[in-house]
Length: 484
Image (spheres, rainbow, N blue to C red):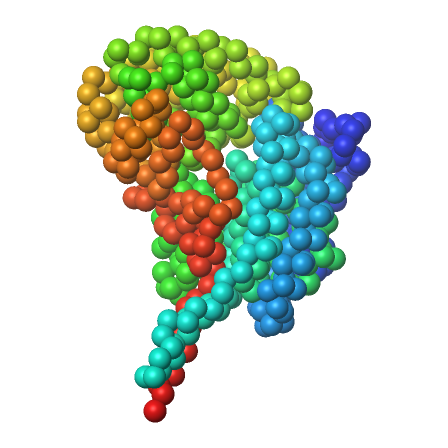
């Protein structure tokens, strides 16, 4: 086994010899089998992590069920205090968790540090959240209260693009309202999540939070498990359909945050340089491996050439390299399967459009793809019709804004979208016509814990964050009194 980071400052241990375990009922438990974790920046193994058996999954679910009554019986203030201590742990181990994220996921270390910072902010926000009982009627005829009960044991499944952050933004809102959890990270990015679980095992009461690793075959067992009351899943639309089907027989509560094919419509009054900067930032962040990143850019003919040139300059300037290099702006794609999909997308870019920048994979160890900008693309190409999860982005021309809106909406996806222009009222009007869970104006991909985030059409079901997201973790209970 190759250890890239044994001497790396900020980690504090040799990852190659570090023993990782499941967290089940407050205990660190060996896996039934082992899984190799690769650094996508070198394609070499850097760690070994556990994979759970069916019996170990059963143990984790049983532990969560045993812990549920006691955790739900705590006051919200007591639960919030524990979550604040969880945030304190994240603060204390910020750099270690960021480096683990980079080593398993590939993203630049600056972006990994942001992931940990967001995890802290979201955890503290939900630690202070209070979902109050509502009085619906109180008159001479009767009194009606709307109460919120924890849904029970939550099965959480996180993907590989934001492994730690997505674990925390599921954990904190679920726990604050009294649920317990069994969480399964992606088999290619379990390091930061398992390390975090080990760090908080003495902070969160035993059984309240359980983490089980897998080799890619445990998700179906978790989503169909009779002891799970709700599934919170983030991942591809294809897998989301299977998750929804698995939840059907027991009518589990379900939140799905799925794929996206986000369009950005640039209006003819846009500031070209500022717009190009924003588009480039949110098209290529995390190597283009973000469900809600900009994937299709629609630009009016009047400024098309200038915008393509401005985007090309910025795309060409993105420094590609290993994520631990502080100068890196674009890391590798996360895994070999994704790398092969990127190769196929690059072939489509050359066949169905004109490659302005990039267009190749890099001949070096690891899964590196040049940041690629494509113009004049055939809009029927899979490069446009399907979600491209790689640093490959397309700029499409339009002459009429109504046509651009129709083309942007012509997709089974509906996660995010954005509009760019200087006439704010006009831009907001266009944004309101886009079929997406969120339409941003003059920015993209801003997530905050107080604002709901979710998709429409085949980009998801339900929402994360905000009051709507919190209410996805509770059942409604009405107490109705008739007064004589």
